[in-house]
Image 1 (cartoon, rainbow, N blue to C red):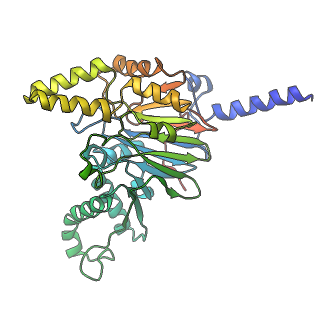
Image 2 (image 1 turned 180 degrees about the horizontal axis):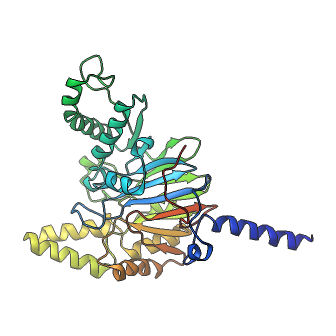
Image 3 (image 1 turned 90 degrees about the vertical axis):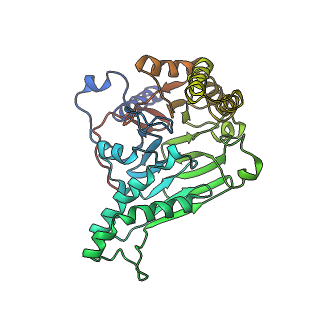
Length: 365
């Protein structure tokens, strides 16, 4: 076989292999039933795609699950995370690593539900495991408070049926280990991923004395199959653009579709709550400097040279509005843009990402 023919044949093999994992429109229908879960792939599962703190009937608060070659990692844990895991067939007790981008209520109030489910399984089945939770300053306080909260409801069970979960001092032994960091750089590494954190601009308007106590981070997660950057909540940021340089996927918050959408929301909030002009101006400054709209996202993605953008932390009114969010990004970005719903799954192989084609089922490590 001549060299050009050999190269062409190899390309066909690669394309067919990728198509078995990453599908496009109509792929599944053309090739029959979804395939089984592949062993070598990075999955991105959107457990919650709404911003908060107001709760919404059709979208849970921000939470995203990565599954890298079968190993799970959770990024943020808003209200509704545990319910979405159940619906997705995910066993929370198999997720041993959780990362928080920042500790706003819409990103962390679902942690207690996840911890309670984990604690039940470790107690009932006598498992001696630990769960590692990484985040900015005050993560330890959050984890300790959540554990204290969930164990109040377990005390009656323990009184009737003492178990190994009670420590020598009469308190429950916690399997949850908090890891705090307050500087940019590598914050986690194992044999599947490396996580690099960069402080973003989400707290840019916070008074300086408080900035020492509160931090908000974006994450660059390097996997064997490509690089994913989570903006978390942020405003326009050169630091985030540098972090995202050359990434395969940018998972970006989209708190506003555009300027008109943002101003309409601000005016409605001001009228509903009878805000003073000063309060309304401060709220507007928050959205301009500490959040992203689709123009900002398109500019960020283009500047960083990413391949694909995925939106979350947004609240489209309907499917047409959801498509408008994606179109807004495309005005300033030439790559692929996805606007996910809760429970949508995407697969990445060799930097190529698209909707997963296989049957959702609990992964095994």
